[in-house]
Image (cartoon, rainbow, N blue to C red; front, top):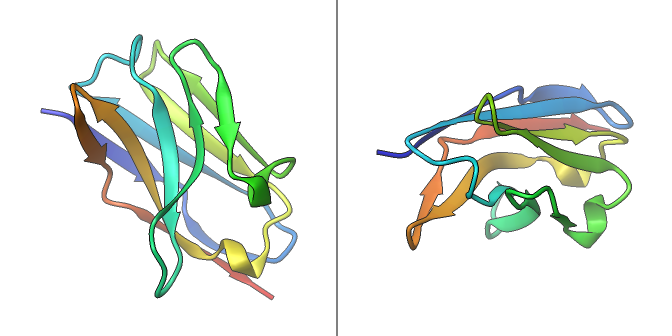
Length: 115
C-alpha cells in the first residue's frame, strides 16, 4: 500500500520561503516519478513540479526560477523549496506519484501566503 505524507506547509508573508517535504512508503523510489500538485481555493488541482527517478525536473511556468524540487531516493523523500512566494501561490499542496498505473496522493498541506 502506497502512502505519501507531506509536511512543511504554513503561513508566510509574500516574498518569504517555505520547504515542503513528502515521505513515501510502499513505493519504489528508485523508479517512481514524484511530483507536487496544488489546488488553490475554488480552482482545479494543477501540477507544480515533478522529478523523475533520474533527476530530470519539470516546472509549471509560474514557479520556474522560484521553486526547486529535489529528491533523496535513499530516504524516500521528495522536497519542494519555494522562494519568493506570492499570494497566488496560496493553495493546498499535494505530493503525488503514479505507481503501477494508479495515481497516489498525500493528504495535502496548506500553504498560505499573505500580502
